[in-house]
Amino acid sequence: MSNPPYDSLRESLVLPFVLLGFVVSALLSLITFALVAELEERAIERMLRVEMESFHNRRAQNPAALPPSAALLAGHFLPIPDFPNVEPVKPGQERIELIMHEDRDYSVMVTAVGGEPYALVYDRTYVSSSLGKLALFLLVGTGVMTLLSFLVGNRLAGQVVRPIGRLLGALSEKVSQANPRDAPSLTFSPLDYPKNEIGRLVQALDQFALRLSGFIERESYFAADVSHELRTPVAIIRGAVEVLVEHRDLPDAVRERLWAIHRQSVRMGQILEAMLLLAMEEGEEGDPACVIADAVKDAVADCTPALAGRPVRITLAVRERAILPVERSLAYVVVSNLLRNACAYTREGTITVFLDGQCLEIVDTGIGIPEDRFPELFNRHVKGDDSSGYGLGLSIVARVAQRLGWKVSLHGGEGGGTRVRVVFAETGAACLPARAATPSATAPA
Image (cartoon, rainbow, N blue to C red):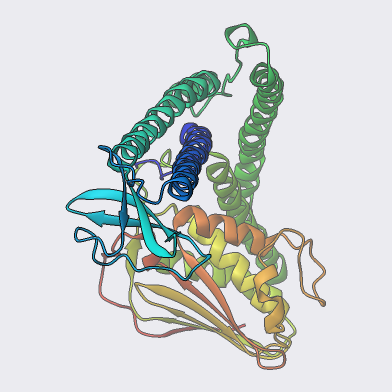
């Protein structure tokens, strides 16, 4: 199975660095361009005013003085043939405007000299071209600074992320090579990592891994040892009961009690096997197969004695016999706990069990459970108000169902009984058809 996508820490570090470099360089470029353009405009305006004042003085001393005429600067009395759009201004006023003529830029200062409209024209094409080159240079500089920010940020991020990647690789290698039957060895060498926060993280992980390894080892040994040690006395009890029930002189009441002990010893053996399977990793069960109808019938038979003295009847309707690719003990634990939960909350009426190849339903007419409590009932140590247990049955059902890929849902309401539905199709594997479907069967209480 491929790993799900994740947010790259390296990209998360590089992106802000690149954005910062771009914003700073672009802001400096804009400020530089604006200052240079403003200085150029002020210089042109000052030159026009100085030249205009000089012409005023010369005109006052010599009314026949000619306007200035040069390659970049020329004076004209309006109208100007080359600039027909230049309009005169009122006496005592002046105006500076930008005009484009024949692909060239001009700054035109319009005023009145000796009562006649006069314009001073300055060819600013070179200035505009220089500003355009400056803008291109600043744009290229912004791109270069952004690229440099990316290279520097990528290098710094690599130096930060590299030890984390090495730690992740070492952890993945240790986990992949670990034997599921043995306690994992997840120790690391802090000397292989820098003496900074990452090194401290490795030290903390190393200490936590040692504690975790010890805990897993103790839990694994406990589950295996308990299952192994209890199997022997359970087998002895079962064998002794099978011998005793064959005695001819036993009273019927004693024989009935012996059969009850036999059923409970068989149930205990299946529960021990299921608990051992839950303690193992998935995929270690081999290629299991279970006739689910047989497990349901055994669970009904084991729960029937608990209803003695109560007007409750268990009805079993098997619509289809199917073989499921699950361990029989795990299937029995699910059905048995759900059925016992129904028996605990049913004081009178019926408990109906429906079974087909896709799902199992257990419907009771008991006192019911409020629907707002359904989501929390599968948590550990959560039980009904009238329950005298420890609140572990439905928690075990949830764990086993998650292991098998089954879906368990509760329906009903207070005073209306409860309906439990277990869908086998969630395993993703099709049920294997066995013999023909068994018609409805009834198990009296």
